[in-house]
Length: 231
Image (tube, rainbow, N blue to C red; front, top):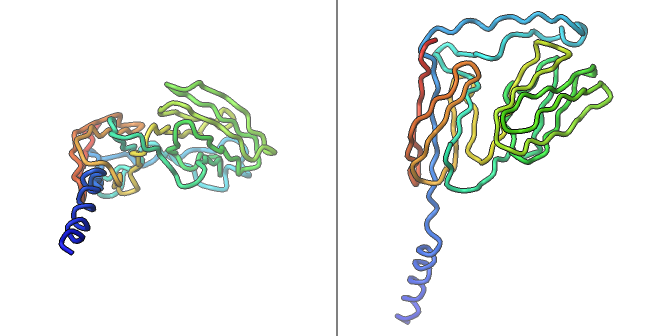
């Protein structure tokens, strides 16, 4: 009887030592701007007014909330400890809707096909300006509702439409799972990060890149707030 009980206790302990405990925490924080941000400039629609003029257009490149929180800051780990891949839970897509790119910044997995959608029913084109991937400039007429694209390497790719000069956005190609975007209040969360020390990177299309060191606990979360200096 004693032997059976001892075995029942020792075996789970040996298994736990062999495989190790689940040890992952979250990185949370808020990105703020120290200065006074200008109000987003209104954008004049100069073409295809019947479609493009249905929605109001304004500059989305620098959006700061009432409490200084900065929207659309890309936050990612520069030195991940595993090879877990970024996933959106469904096939990634980028829409051209109301003659604007939706979303303004889209995070997609490296090497996975992305659906570029034309919801407007007029001629658009996708013109990319990458650093690490081949550029392309492809027309997407109204009868081509969906056009596939693949970005093989991690990158931050600016996208424009040569037909509608005001259309501009970004595709962030994620090489691993630990990427996120700040929300309208500047808040972010990267969940399920293996415990350890990391370099966290922050990128904003107007404010540039910043980085800081963080140590992720085995459980719970670490706070990694950042304030961009006034420009």
